[in-house]
Image (cartoon, rainbow, N blue to C red):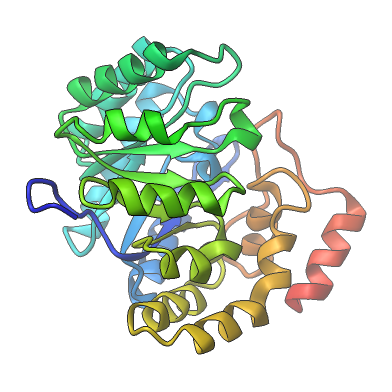
Length: 293
């Protein structure tokens, strides 16, 4: 990427689950989750993203979560924080709160439900970038938002000095390839789909913002290291070996499966905030069988 902008991380950033206990954030489990990720060699940690049940967190909880993590990490790797909302004003409030609490960079999903137009999406992200005053990562996940970024949007947003990267989580690898080719000198590109990691990095992506790395961070870091070394054949082999597990984490709405698996591994409790609940009994059984839990 161009030297005028900062590369936040390369390889794996784990989109970390938010552990709860009796309705509150479970900071003891969060501490252990963070240390597990650091020991595995991930490139960054993302808090309060979709996998972290961000839409159920208050602004105060966003800030407290990030402040705790910033103290625990102590600068050992970059800390990313979600600040997405379908209200631009609320997204700006979140951006300010998590930036002040110690986030090194911000990630904001496209507005959902009240889907905007071309001018609106650019204005939305410019407002967040100005409010947060931290490097901003765009997040495109049309399956969840009903809105998809286009290459034209990316070209325009790439000109903003604080917009440094994209988490591209659409199923369209051709869009990711075009994004890398046309905007790669101004934006770092990360896939948001674990099963696209090797293919995306071969097309020019810098890494992945991963769900699977919650429960298998070493496997994800290995895949990314192999890609960085240009060993594409082995990287694809390693990814194929765990592909069924990556896909299983989306048998129900994320993060229902990944939090269930993490709980069975002793990493947290099986506690969610409504409207999310524990997985259906058949899903739970199949997850236990696949992950040998």
